[in-house]
Amino acid sequence: MSKIYKFKILLCISGFLFGFTTVSQAQFSLTGEIRPRAEFRNGFKTLRPEKADPAFFVEQRSRLYVAFKQEKFHLQFNLQDVRLWGNTSQVYKTDEHSLTNVHEAYGEYFFSPKWSIKVGRQEIDYDNARIMGNLGWAQQSRSHDAALLKFENVEKGLRLHMGGAFNQGDIFEPGRLSGTYYEGINNYKTIQYIWLNKESDTGAFSILALNSGYQTTDTTVQFMQTLGGAAHRKFGQVKLEGEFYYQLGKNADKRNVEAFMLSLSGSFPVGALLLTLGADYLSGTKAGDKDQNAFTPLYGTNHKFYGFMDYFYVGNNHAQAGNTAGLFDPFVKTKVKIGKGVLHIHGHYFMSAVEVLDVTDPGKNLSRGLGAEVDLVYQLKLMDAVTWHLGYSQLFATESMKALKNNAGAYDKLNQWAWTMITFKPQLFSTAK
Image (tube, one colour):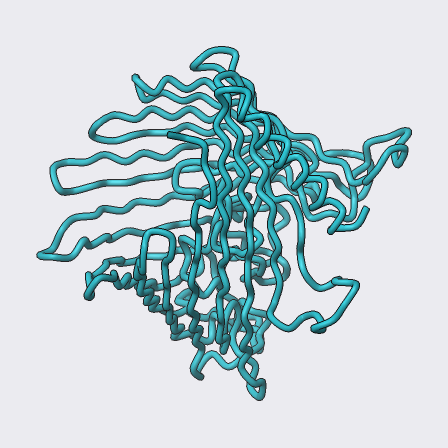
């Protein structure tokens, strides 16, 4: 089935839903989104090669959000197209270099005002997106094929979600007539989780218990558990936040897992500024260790936490002998109002959580300091449906960073990243009064 044909089917469904609203009290809405982002990469994600030219490109996300709501059930279809400008000819019949898919397609049935079941392709985004996030920064974002049983008591600020998923790789019936072996896809085979959240006027806390199953190269499935939670509380103008998660079980390589992460921060006003001071610690695995002591942030939005240049936990590794070194990240964050916009300023100092070996002299250890990063992002709301961003980041790396990045790249040269993005997201149609 071609991508264009899929879109025609879904648009027909949308038209049916629109017509259905004329004979019922249902609500129907259409929202569009166009989000092009231009990026200049000169040391983004990894140290820039000695003699390589910088990269420059424009990537665009285009989405159509289709929502249908009745008293007893909701339907959601989010269609998206993600592509680089110029990756197809002006006149073409095939398009193999872009992503055109259904980002979300789920239904939610309400047994009562507080209990519901939500089934289908959906974003799962909890708390600050540390462990489970929608990865909204990435143009394609992240979604899960899952089922959720939900209890939500808005008056008491209490939410309880119980979710699960079981993944297979065959496309169409009768692709699989026996067995459940899952291969060739970078994904979990199965997950089960419970998330409990309680909010009050002065703060909130959440508890997460997550069981992730990964297919091994044989027919077995190895399970890793992530247990912990997050909390924040306000004391006047001061806001304190904390998170702790512990991992155990086995990874997909059948290695024993024992790892943890801890985050603490405090926010308070300093004149016209809101200043945040804090630190994240993710345990690491020493080179040569058989067990996994490196914490894995799993399905979180890592771009949000460990520096915007994505040197850590975002589609790449910082490791020795295949073992992730972990991270200690003290940070300071603030924002300044400039005109009608806001300038966000973040500073990080990165350190390895374990010893860093000198690649040229294995008997010698390097400093655990990996370098510092400064992130600047200016955000301006041009109108209700249009927002513009401009960003610049620079990394001041050390020799230890080079050792953890395959001993490649110029750590003592300029490593930088610049980008600009404009987002158009208007509501195109709505029957809501």
